[in-house]
Image (tube, rainbow, N blue to C red; front, side, top):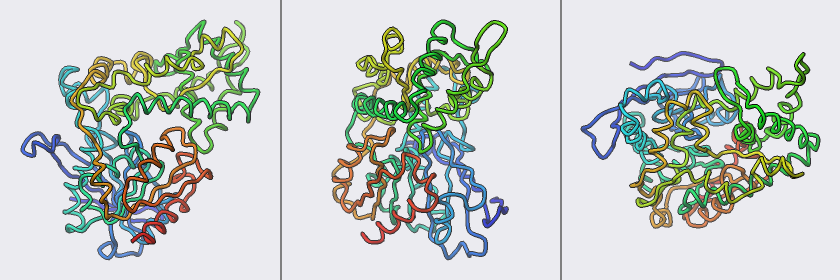
Length: 434
């Protein structure tokens, strides 16, 4: 039974569904999905078309809005919004170090996790859509990885869509995991240099922190180990609109005087822990590279780690031995994540098996996308750190009828940072196309 309740300006309804774990075996094991319906107060939901929101990630549940925050305010003027926790996230059969052992051995866990990519997420959406919409198509809004899912939706089930809106998540249709990271490291380097140009004092601060950690990795609250590589991964902040500023404020509070000499402050360590922990989204680490896997014969094999070796400017030891700035990384997953984060340590063997896995199937159908008839609009951010702009624009040229808004006004999180503007622009584009 669905439960409804209220927040400022909204009426919320909880929905639960069961779907096959493997949609190719509809009579096999089933898992539970959760989604939250949001309707503006005073509107009759039965008169409104549906908008399905797919969060970025992988591994994040749908954002928990309070009232009419951010883009939701614009969407609620004309839509009945469904905030879906994608399988394995939020309240949809959540997967983590506590629940995955229920699946059995690491090999059994890895086999289970192979069903948590965009192909399964889209088939989940198609399984629940008829019961909600009466069979009518709905609009999908995909942020980041949610845009990858929307592109798969257009490739495999366009009949379920009345429109597709993509923000910072138009994927390359053909890039391998290795190619994704070969394009990513130069972008990360540019973001680093821009940060140091804005905050030149941070270059010495970052080197000092890294040198300290090279001598003595820090123990963070909760059992995390802050190594030099883990410290570098704080660069994930640099892909957000205010991330450079957040990183600056974190670095400026790094050291405090103690009777034993300067030490990393509790405030800095707690700030780092909050940013680095995967406890709330372990799927991000476990299946991150798998979202790029499309060649049945080729494993991802820790692509980011292998590609990083070919970019020596990201080698902290070399930077500290010379006078190069320490470069931060971001949006990359490495084997050491599964030795430094207590929420991932028990899943290390499972992660190794996923990295070695073959048999991945293609996620996009270029021929079907070239014949697309669904109105599509995509916000492409000019120098997006997380998703390659050149790859996004190449895809845009292959999807029939897709209209882009290329902007350097926002970073990857533009749909969150802009409030209603990004969504309003995309709706205008799909309506012009329709």
